[in-house]
Amino acid sequence: MTRNLPSLDLKRNYDRIRDEIREALEGVLDSQHFIMGPEVESLERETESYLGVDHAIGCASGTDALLLALMGLDIKEGDEVITTPYSFFASASCIARLGATPVFADVDPDTYLIDMDKVMENITSKTRAFMPVHVFGQMVPLEGFYDDLVPKGIEIIEDAAQAFGSWREKGKDLKRAGTWGKAGCFSFFPTKNLGGYGDGGMVTTNESDYSERISRLRVHGAGKTYYHDELGINSRLDAIQAAILRVKLRHLDEWLEERRLAADRYKVLAAEYGLLEKISLPVELDGNFHIYHQYVIRAQDRDELMKYLSSQEISSRIYYPVCLHLQKCFSYLGYSEGDMPVAESLSKSTLALPIFPEITSEEQERVISAIADFYKG
Ligand SMILES: *Cc1c(COP(=O)(O)O)cnc(C)c1O
Image (cartoon, rainbow, N blue to C red; front, side, top):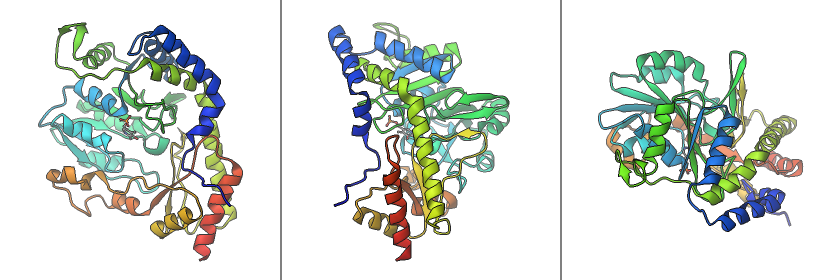
C-alpha cells in the first residue's frame, strides 16, 4: 500500500518545532493577554527587521491587510485599482468591498505574474492604485512599474500573501517582497509559507503617517481607546498567533531553502523522466528569489492527469479554476470569457504539485514517475 501524499503536510512541520511552540503557547497562557499586546509588538518588530521595512502592523488576516492598506489610501467609489485576474479572490474583493472598481490586466503565460504592458494599457484618469500579486511565491518585477506608475500618483499595494521572505534584486540590493510599494500585505493563513495556527495578517510600509493611520484603522479608527477619529474596522492580531509566528519566523529561512531544493529536484526529475514535452515547469525570473509557496506546472490533459494522480494517492490542486473576472459576484463589472485569454488558459491547464519543506526526494520521484506513467498511457 502506498501512503497518501498530501499537497502540504503541516503535521511534519509541527513535529520539528513542537517543543518550541508549546513553550511559546504556555507563555501566552500564563500571561492571559490574548489580543495584541507584547507578543504582537515583538512579532511586528521582528518582521520589520526580517523584511527590512520601517513599519509592520499586525492584523486579523491577509484579506484585512489588503482592505486596511486600501482604506489607508481612501480608496472609494469611482476609483479604479488594477490587479490580476489570476489570484486568490481576496486580491479583488477588498477593492470591490470599498466600492471601488477592480480592473483586471492579463498575466504572463510563463511566470503567471501580471503583465506590465497590460497594466499600462488599463490606466485611466480614475486609476488610484495598482495591486501586484506575487503569486505562488515569486515577485512581480516591480522596478519597471515603479518608474511608470508612481510619478503618475498611482500607489503600489503589494499582495505579498504568498511571498513572505521572497525577494528580488534592485540594483545591487536584495529587496524583500512587501517592501517595494506604498504597502505590503501578508497573510498568516496556516497554509502560507509563514503560517499561524489560525487567521492572521500584516501590513508593512516605510511611511510613518500611513503606518499610524493603518494602526488606527485596525482598532475601529481609535487613536486612543474609546476616542474614534474615523471609521475603522476590528482587525486585531491574537497573541497566540503572534507567539507561534515568532517561533516559525526563526526557522523560515531554512524552510524556504528546503522548498527551493524541492523545486530543483522536480526540475531534475522532470528532465530525467523525459516530461518536458508534456508539462511546463514554473519559470523563475532572473533576479528573483522564488520561495515556491506553490509549485505550479502547466500540463496537457490537466484534468485527466489530476484524476490519475489522485488514483495513485497523490494530491494535487488547481490554482485557480475560475479567473477573478469571471466570478459570479463580479458579473456586474461586465467582463466575459475571452477577455483575459492567458489567465483563462492557465485556469484550464495549471496544476500545483505537492511541495512543502519536509517533502522527501522519494515522494517527489513518486509524483514525477506517476506523471510519466500517465503520459505513457
Ligand atoms: C491567502 C491570500 C490572501 C488572503 O489571506 P487570508 O489570510 O486568507 O485572508 C490574499 N491574497 C492572496 C494572493 C492569497 O494567497
